Amino acid sequence: MADSNPVIQLLLTGNEIMSGDTVDSNSAMIAQRLAQLGLSVQRKVTVGDDPALLRRELAQLSRDSDVVIVNGGLGPTIDDLTAQVLADVSGQPLREHPQARAHLEQWCARRNAPLNAANLKQAMLPAAADIIDNPIGSAVGFQQELNDCLIICTPGVPSELRLMLDPVTATLAQRLGKTAQVEIIRLQTFGLGESSAQQIISDAAPDWPDDVDLGFRAGAPQLEVKLTITDAAFRAQQQGCREQLYELLGDHIIGEGSTTLAQRVLQLLQEQGKTIPTAESCTGGLIASMLTQVPGSSTGFHAGFVTYANHIKHSVLGVEEAALAEHGAVSEAVVIQMAEGALRRSGADYAIAVSGVAGPDGGTEDKPVGTVWLAWGSAGQISTRGLCWPVERTLFQTMIAAAGLDMIRRRLLGLSSEPNYFRQRATQVS
Image 1 (cartoon, helix red, strand yellow):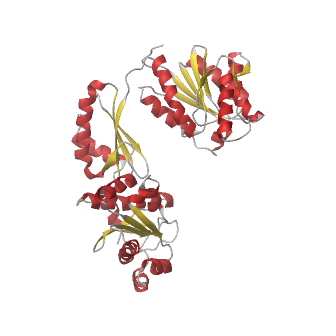
Image 2 (cartoon, rainbow, N blue to C red):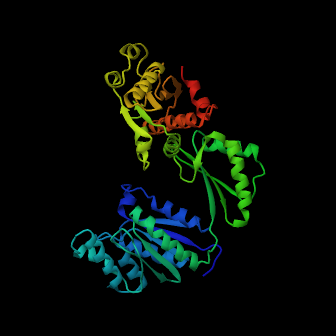
Image 3 (cartoon, rainbow, N blue to C red):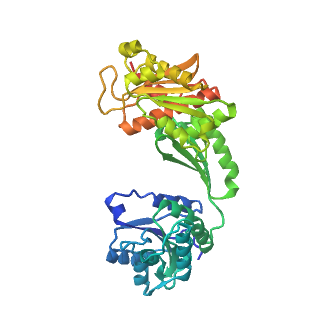
């Protein structure tokens, strides 16, 4: 089958998705991988663990689609129904699949665990099904034809699905005649909202080329700007657009691909042979957590001080009690001393310090919820800025942690220009 616009639909299964206990991220993962082949999902349906509903939806989807990807329901428990439902709809018996059993035996042997009856349920598949290997999980995937539609059944565990999408997309590329890959350049930015970035680009480039699709993926804390082409013949235009975005968005671009602020900071520290600690109050160690999530972070990150209470700021970092009494914990004087104390205690080259009012309570007229002071720099060269970022507590912590990392990134790069969010947020701070 070769169709420029094949109909691909998703069937997501599980009571845990319907109840909200599990947030569906798998459909996004599938859609993103299909997009690399120039394919898109026309529709997705989510159904709980109800055999009758699943049979009805699968039968209808198979009649309306070229490909149906079923996600979930492959496990060992009684509510894992995918194999039985597909067998019922296709009029086939379930049988023990030798390859699936061998996979289970090897999976159990690696864990020195018995192959019990519950696990063996995962080897009972529709008679006409072909196996899709699962490199890490106990349940194999499988696929078969139904009503001239390819049904592909995949596990609901995201880490297992991620690895299995390689053979799935290879199968689809061959079946649907998709040889050319979509090419995407992803620019990671911080400090610009989606609308602000779009306005900057629209004002400067009103005649954006039709062959390069400009897209945005908003998130916290970063905004991803995407340049997509569907034919290698448009690479020159894509590269031209990339260069234009670097000119327009400037030092708000932190990197390409999946680069995070923490990765970029650690890269710069490693290149320059420098190290950093963090001194955190309102972010509760989140900056340190962001840094230590990066493999190899120990080369640049030395210590994290979470000094939430005032007496800990004094006893651990040496913040003067007089400064706390006169200015309060959320003040320029205090974050300077927090940064200086972190530098002294760690012997590192640079430091980040933050203290703020995360909310929802604790704000005052002078220091409303969202008020924060940042300090960053090296011994004798500490910079500060007071901001007001009045958002929900968790988002506040995320954005302030990112802002601290961003300011160190800018210091390490020798950038003197101020980020967009300084202008947006500083006006609300007295």
